[in-house]
Image 1: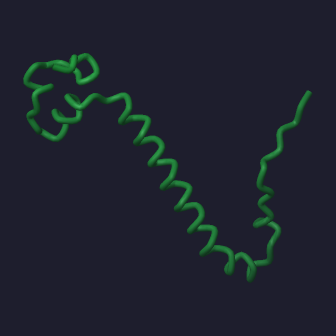
Image 2: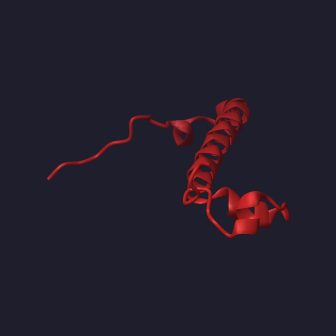
Image 3: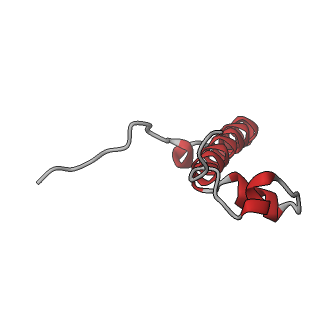
Length: 78
């Protein structure tokens, strides 16, 4: 049986209240940056699944793909 340990050892809970106050700002900044990166990664993955015709219909834009009702992945270059 293997036991998995996290790569980062978070000792925050063992810090004094004074030290926690000093660490709160930087911890929040790191958490915010990690959330931003995760959201960007999710957006890229989602965008890869959505064709331009779907995006155009979401933003009410008419393009040749919407008019022809073909997905850009299915459309052959002319």
